View 1 (cartoon, rainbow over the protein chains, first blue to last red):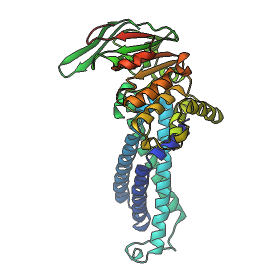
View 2: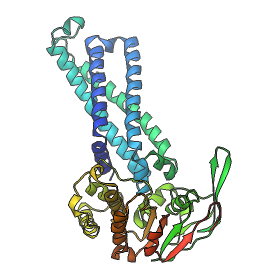
View 3: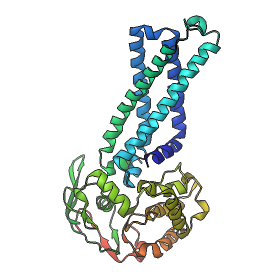
Length: 172
Length: 216
């Protein structure tokens, strides 16, 4: 049930979702450069600063995506959708959106560092210095940040769902 | 509905919508609620549908006091027992007609094969077979309203609530919708319709006038 709602919402908001995927992918590419290319993983102040920026940016994007979903929240609830159905659908959508964007961003970022010659001189990252542990650490960090941002958005959606249906219908 | 009281908080204090509303609708009855703008017709339907709660009083639907139900229980009750046609168009424009009709059945947990069967039945009855795969955004206002009514009926609920279903439509489209409503579909159901239009009284068993700031 939640999966059906999630898939249809992706279809409904496809243009917004594509924009969100693009922005998050670009963010993930940037952080791949910072963490792997500029040794951000070994520089604690840089890591903390950039991680904070990333979490704020991801939370902001996810909140916007969740707000687009609010447009149909009133209709879904009026037709009999339970709170758990809506929360599950939003969680599935944001998880898929976040993970697809972040993973493609990391791979795209690494590919760019390997392929574009003028990027390499600015960084200490080379093919020889590639470290699988660094890659896994970067992947883990970004996935954790995605889930922190999703939790922030889910709390916001929960606040909307707690309202009366008549109030949710005013969004339509 | 028994002794229902409802007030809203306005900019200049509280607005009394209902002071003591008592309304009884028998099973299988079709009633039309008429009255001027702002007299509380939509509020009345919102209360019956469980979209909003009264300040006091009880609202029994099929023997269940919906005022006492929590949000999820009332959502499940609504999905199973009520088909609702809203005043404003609440179809999802980016989805096809088929997907819009499928939505209440999905929320009800109906299996895919059964969904297909029920949708093909309602599509036949509503004469909308020609544009089932079209996106709702490409349809005219009248076509959208027929789809909205079909969506309310697709899960075969015993109660139908319609909030001003013909108000924005031209006479020809209104005729088409009235013909659809008069058909066998509504004969077995309890129907509550709010309207300004006298024509819709053709399908009503009882007309209930609602006056501004006054109980029924």
